[in-house]
Image (cartoon, rainbow, N blue to C red; front, side, top):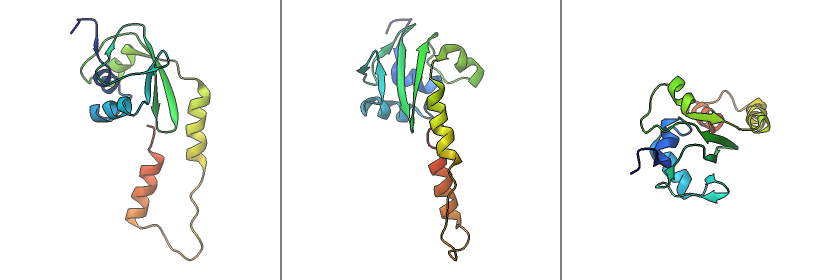
Length: 127
């Protein structure tokens, strides 16, 4: 492996676009990660100044590689290696989805613990 490159699944995980490396690899295999309009495999080697787009939940994040990192470090360090070029409209989609209230039919009672966890899981998609 070249000193100036790292696998894309590892880089996506290290800069905190995905919570786990497995999620990053699955996103690549599913075609949710593109570089210059081309879908990439998890083994693709990331190079400096590449611009990639990754579909995360309902939004598509656009990121420029400004540093090569292969280990997960603090969030401030991760921000130094990726420049966020995502248009504000993408983040607006996420805000709009979270602003929609959840309605329960009258008389059904309070949500159970299981219901609450499902609601939280639904709204945490895309983080």
